[in-house]
Length: 181
Image 1: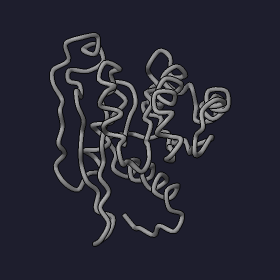
Image 2: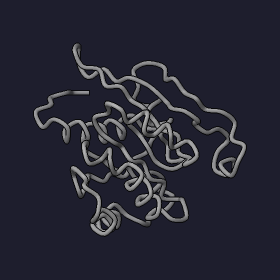
Image 3: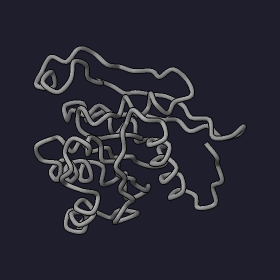
């Protein structure tokens, strides 16, 4: 499952990685989201990734707006891991990190998390090391499966970047995985 704030690139990431055309519930933005992008996800994005002849990964993207948080719990049912995408150009990336980790605290107590930092080419701070330093304080009362998850700088439009982050998540789920994408 991919989550993160509006504009973090969840739809783009799933589009870049999916082996099939994605199902998207994007509609024209009509609230403050319109200042960040023209369309926004209101239910989910969905795609698939064929790892090998027997293994298919289902990719789900959540809406970024809190008013659609009821979808977060629905999409988390049966999920195996969480990719948290954070937009470095937003005003308060630390608050975004804290908000999404706390919002998914019950889920991440059962599954691994991988963090992807997008738009770090536009805004260098915080760096992956800065995010890693923030995590102990933010997660001290969360029962996370991996308290310091892997953190990557990614471009959500680039298949290779999204493959890297998803492979890190798959490896966190099963260290015996052997897949060549």
